[in-house]
Amino acid sequence: MRLPTGDSLLVQIMDTAFAETAQRAGERLLCRKGCTQCCHGAFVVNPLDALRLRVGMDTLRSTEPALAAGIESRARAWVAEHQAEFPGDPQSGLLGDSKLDRERFEDFANEAACPALDPGTGRCDVYAWRPMTCRIFGPPVRMGDGEALGHCELCFTGVDWAEVASCEMTVPYDLEAELLEEIPLKSETVVAFALLG
Image (cartoon, rainbow, N blue to C red; front, side, top):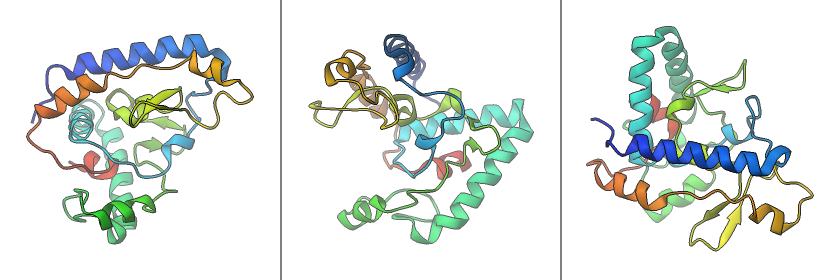
């Protein structure tokens, strides 16, 4: 499968939005290489993010095979450690969508390091292809119904709410939803399974 043509626009919009937010926030936004708190704990990866990760791995396999092999090794180790408790199909890596599966996911692999994280450098080895969740974690972003404004607990400490709100990052949820409609696969997964394809 190929990424929808609009995915490059989505990534560009997100990168620009993050850069503008980081400029407004200055030192209040602590997101830097080596800060890896957000790189721990399993989270849902939608089909667009999973496909982008697979494209990234295909690129790395041809351009940097040793790096790709290291990522795959960490992903296989992650799956081996967490597969028995996986709230879905532990072979395909597709998350279950029952109420019980969703409840089980709340406590699933919450402390586990992302297999894309290089433990020696604190660098994301698939940074260019990372999921949207990773692209929005840190700065103030509207969540859910758009009422709640959340940000990383390490950022904006001791800052009043108006100052936090002035650094809000706009997320093109509508564009992402349109691109998701273009992908036949509708099931969600987690990073480790997406990296293994």
